[in-house]
Amino acid sequence: MNRVLSCIQPTGDVHLGNFLGALRQWVSGQQDCDGFYGIVDLHALTVTERPGVIGQATMQLAAVLFAVGLNPQVSTVFVQSHVPEHSQLAWIMECNVSFGELSRMTQFKDKSAKRDGEFISAGLFTYPALMAADILLYDAHDVPVGDDQRQHIEITRDIAMRFNARYGDTFVVPNAVMPKTGARVMDLQDPRSKMSKSATTDSGLVYLLDEPEAILKKFKRAVTDSETEVRFDRENKPGISNLLEIHAAATGQTPSAVAERYSQYGPLKADTGEAVIELLRPIQARYAELMSDRGELSSLLRLGAVKARGVAAATLQRAYDSVGFLTS
Ligand code: TYM
Image (cartoon, rainbow, N blue to C red; front, side, top):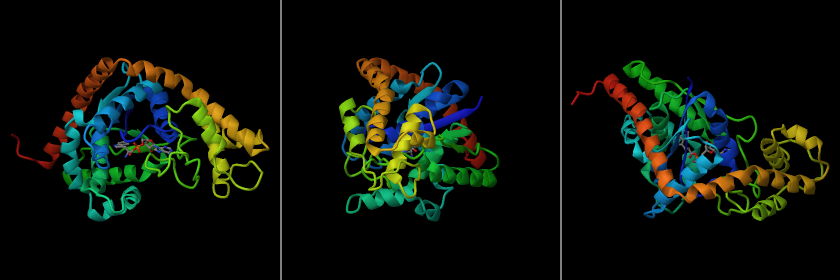
């Protein structure tokens, strides 16, 4: 069966971009693959300095993942720091990627620019090596992600091919898989920037757990343009196109088909807000139930870690054997 791996960081609250770009694909594809889905807390450490924050965020994110529909009987949901092989393989990845390659990563450039004047850890720079380890440990063929991860999957492929060429065939070379609509959800207040947990204000971000009134308000205030024509044109009409794409993703249509039904911005904004509220309503109800039993969540994560380690330990050993480390 097709092996699938993807991960999400426990930093900030999950937003509509995460859901439409990634989580929804994880859920819809889970029956047809052998899926591993990680909460990557080690990655979160690159931008989190306060103690105690990551553990709490990890628990909430686990509840979100089960609330959106990951089924623990079918999919393996695990926490990255519970599977030590991730850090172990990451070192080998670091030794198979160059300083120049890491320097070209746009996410590093963006994130370090946003932290100007603050502490910029070496971990933020070597982040793609840990991400490559996350993927290659599971022999993943497909990696369902949003468009912003495209470059990270490319560098993972490059690392896998380089390692295989140097040490012999060891890793599966993975492919990025993106949804038809929702691969790049933009900020409602700044539709030329992607919706991101690291945005300076959250008025343009729709969180999965936002109250319905807050969601509607954010859509009604979405930045558009001074024209009046509703048409899908990302380049010239980024605000309207983002609304059309969100509406389409929430209702299973194409953005152009949605555009045909509207001649004014106001109704498009309100209906998109309503469509998102309906999409999120059942998720919010399940989240509340799941968070009321943290013992159960912890035990699901423990089971996930055991399954993940089974696969990860075998791959790490294979990599050690390929390198030819002296056996202990
Ligand atoms: P993260 O935690 O930022 O985001 C999780 C997933 O959400 C997608 N996403 C979006 N999709 C559409 N529109 C947006 N505005 C938007 N914002 C985020 C991301 O593409 C991602 O799929 N580096 C990764 C985490 C990671 C990972 C991995 C992913 C670590 N190891 C291995 C896949 C495989 C990240 O920071 O995602």
